[in-house]
Image (cartoon, rainbow, N blue to C red):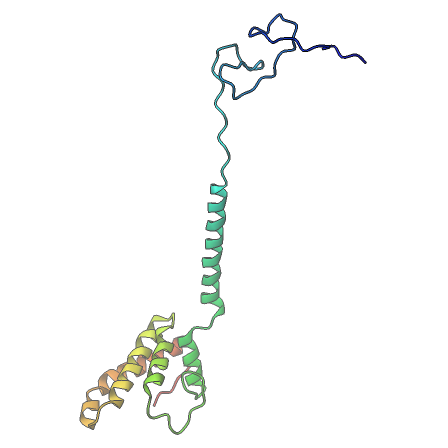
Length: 180
C-alpha cells in the first residue's frame, strides 16, 4: 500500500479546492461550521443543560425523612406501650405505678421517686391520664411536705377530684384501679 500523501505540503488559509482533506468540525471553535447544522454563519443551537443530581439527592433525603417520621409514628402509636396505660395496668394489678411490687415503706416519696412518678404520667399520650395522674402526684408530693395536718385538709377536695378522674381514665382503657 502506498501513502497518498508523500510529502507534507504547505497549508493555505483557504482549504477549499486545494486538494487537502477537510478539517473535522470542532464545536468549540469560533466561526466553525457544523456540516450537519444550518448554513455557515448561523448560530449554533444552545447546549442542553447539564443534568444535576441535586433534585435526586433532595428527593432521597425527603423520602428518608418521611419514612423516618412515619416509622416513629407507627412505633410510638402502635408498638410502644403508653406509659400512663402501663401505670394503670400496674396499679390494677396491685403494684406501684412503675410496675414494682408494693412495699411497707411506700408511704413517703423521695424527690427522685416523685419526679419519676410524675414523668410516667407526663409522657402518656392519653390526655385524661396525663392530666389527672400528674395532678394527683403533685398533690401527694405537696401534702407529704406539709408539717401540720390542717394544711393537708385543704388538698382533700382536689385530691378526690383527681383520684376519681384517674380511676375513670384508667377504666376507659380497660383497667380498674382502686386508689386508697
